[in-house]
Length: 453
Image (cartoon, rainbow, N blue to C red; front, side, top):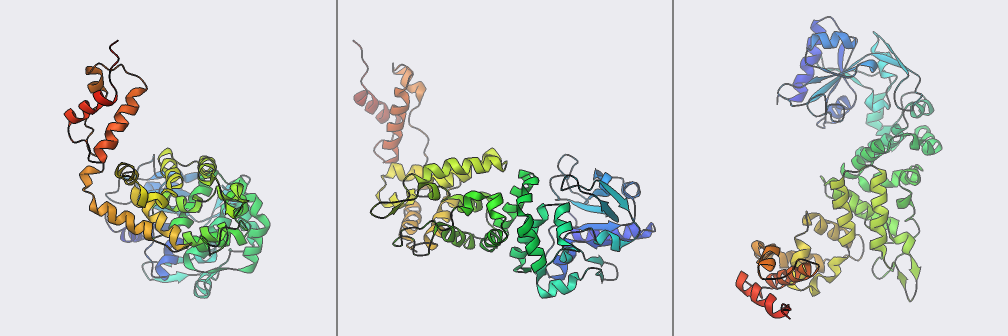
């Protein structure tokens, strides 16, 4: 695919040749000024959506009523079915506009197209995202003090923060995410408005909240993001189960770092970058079952916190509309994270079944940062890696020696006993005590003799 920046500049050039104003705008300008590689490119213009679609015949008018048209990059495979959900392979071309009313807290009730780029900038969210770039002259147009805030490392709304957040409540989460990603401070009036309006975040769809939280977790500053979520009063609203970890003490012998919330944030600080979405959410939720299972006996205990945590995490993931595949992996990470304590005592068969779990590298990564965020003892982690390295890969999940058809052919009636027989045979195979089909069938006949009476 041709370079996205080059093609975005080409779109600006084409619009200019047709007599229109056109600039790069938003996050791509911010990132270029910061020396970062933009994830995508946006263009703003005085051309109406109809004019844009006429100039670029291959377009997707997914937001034409709001002045937004998507122009595919050359050789991209973006299509109308996916372009509304993913910016990959397209440039968003938006007409200068002002927005009139936001009854649903997301979309403007009405838009008024404009010929003035200043009008368009003033409707946007934060000053650092309100910069225009003329890519032909390299001139930056700054009507809102965005360059000054970039230099001062500040997140500030454009205009009145109360009005900006009333227009789209998700902007509160975006402010936190940008502050965490860039290591910026949120300007006091902006931060105060977030704290005041945090309960209004429930007007935002679960999917949009999920996507914003996921970005916080995978962009490299997850711990800082969740500290800001807590300070801004948003955490209690979007993930009360995580907020409930605050003040829940842990046994100092195993957790000298502090309470469950402190421990979880330390894990988030240690997430690798880049990190898989499922590992990030597994780290966030791995101890979610501790607050409701806290009790003090001879010491602090969390009996059954894994099982309770899996149930709680399932509810959270369903609430946030995660895919079934992501749910399965995240829940597996939570369900198995305590099993590393037993790896040095596991039989070969148990160990092989453990390490052949889907995406076991994520289980291992979670265990490592779990240890580093508490007692610091990596002996189980090191043992697991060394033992895995010593086992021939083909012996971890070898083809089964026998199956149900073999048992039926030998005269066994299908039923619950089949699972026990096949499981026992696989154990012995993994223990290297059975090697061939004949050995397996001989074992079955001896251990489970047929009743010929």
